[in-house]
Length: 297
Figure (tube, rainbow, N blue to C red):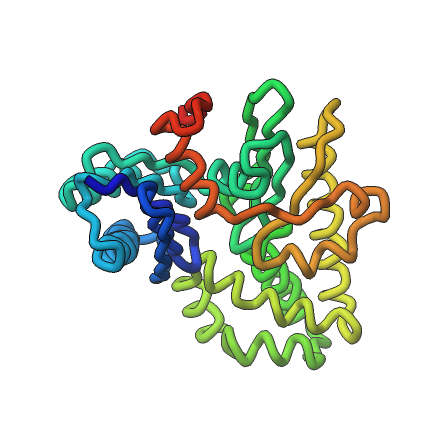
């Protein structure tokens, strides 16, 4: 019988999967739509299930002989987490493991070595694995109260700022504002409609406009200065008394990195792998491969 591990990274924007056959070392990958547990759970289950089915077919494996480890955004939503677990069990995965995407990112980036991982994507979160093997999460509370320096946070900050200008008697739109209003609407009715239907992904889609406008817009510059300050504060909080290497990951990592202080940049190292690799790593620990300790909670 083939023994396989199926690692899944279910994020707000897309779902990535990797199937690894432990007997042969072969692997297959697949991608689907959003998989966050904070989003519509039926769509999330559909996208995660699509990736799982495709990979089982590619690897000619059955769910019964495959350990599935899914690192998902929004796992604090227990009801949605249980719904996903039930859906996976109905696909005949015997004991699917659902953990946070922050944890899978942590083990993917460091391959089990002590490290601090700052994930900057649609949302933001930091995770630390210290020299004693203890994990701790910083941030990751969601856009309502957190996710500082994330794509969604930056996009929302841009809307907040331009609407403050929009309400002024002497309002005149500059190029940055014009680009934003082209997307969200140029009158109160259209703007209200866009905001009513806005998701974290929709907010995050506005972030690239902020990045490209810093040379000509004070609003964009101020937003990016705040984002950099937030990332630096997150790194300092996660470091505590530990002098550990830091890894920046996610879609915003390359944008934020050159803006950090020289001292913090000197501590940053490349990631050894991604969240899907981390899910595979945790699966191997669960199966007690290489006689290592199971780190899953």
